[in-house]
Figure 1 (tube, one colour):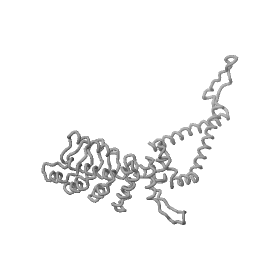
Figure 2: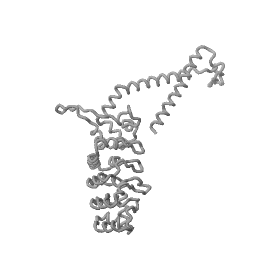
Figure 3: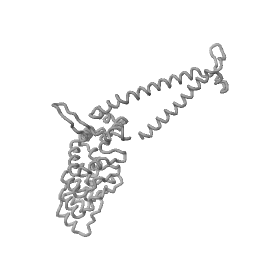
Figure 4: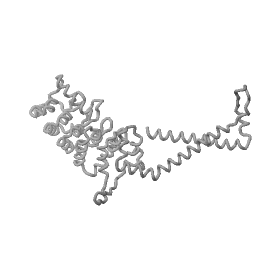
Length: 335
């Protein structure tokens, strides 16, 4: 949405400096008479680009000029597949402009004209991701519902499972951004009411993409590893709160207790090996100081007690390697 506002400001600047072409000016000012003359002129280049690499179709969508958009699509239907070509905003399509502006007529026209709903911008975001990032959450939810209503039910799951370059679907992006309004909207779509009795409601939730069981980059994992405080507040929402409680009571507390016990035992073994390390009897250096010298390797394991200490030392080394492997795996997983 921020990018779209920048484009709009840039187009306004181009008008003030006199660098605007007649085609762009007609599209922006909703001048149908001038536009039809330009369309009929063979010298008109429908693929000309503006200051941000936008096409004339982007301009018409940006300024909510419905009739202009229809005329452009009738004359140049291929424009619907052209994104912006400026490096900063490469990939952004007219469909995203219409959705973020909130113009249902233009959005419907673009969808019915074959606008690519799966098209991704430079960050890998589709129009659905753009609505998640929209600052006006109420309008974004309304436009999301409207957009979904224009698509067949069979196609919706495929479009909603497209991930951007960060690996986020629209649902996961809402979790990453700590966007409670959009997140509750997505969760509401996953809820199925089983029965109701007065104020009591029994519901089932589809946990696909939410639970960590079948997804290495699930919503739960995104939220629990996020540094965004707003994202952590999502754990108070249903069904995340219930899911987290279930995981803790079934598995989490057992895993925690196991690692606590192992850590204590490891620390005790390490401490014991240090206390009973092989050293020669104390040599008095002065009245107030003594010097203790480590035994040589052939002397360090000469007694039966030394082999008990050696078992502890082996345990410490193996434990250190195990901890290192776990930490490296965890670091690689979260990068």
